[in-house]
Image (cartoon, rainbow, N blue to C red):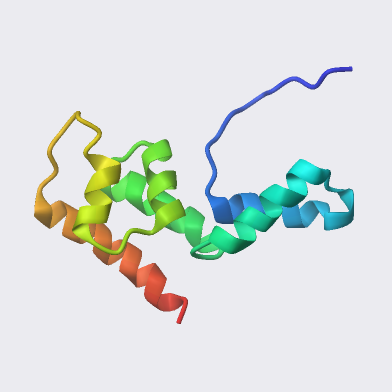
Length: 113
């Protein structure tokens, strides 16, 4: 019996890593194992922090979830890098706002040690 998709929600790379790890590597197919390997290599923060950052970006800066997820996946370190995610041709964002977003990212990045 085919499964029915009830909800679609973009998640971060660290959250995908947690989901795959919870299934147990022995229960993963080849594609899932490759995906797990990717998530291990490219997770920038732990899953709980990733979700907190996404929520902060949405609530404080009015971002769409998809936008916030992409920012957390890459954790840009400069205004120039951050501008790439937010300048998708639809609006110009003030430098002070970009600096505030970077401050949020750096707070969580610094917690990692």
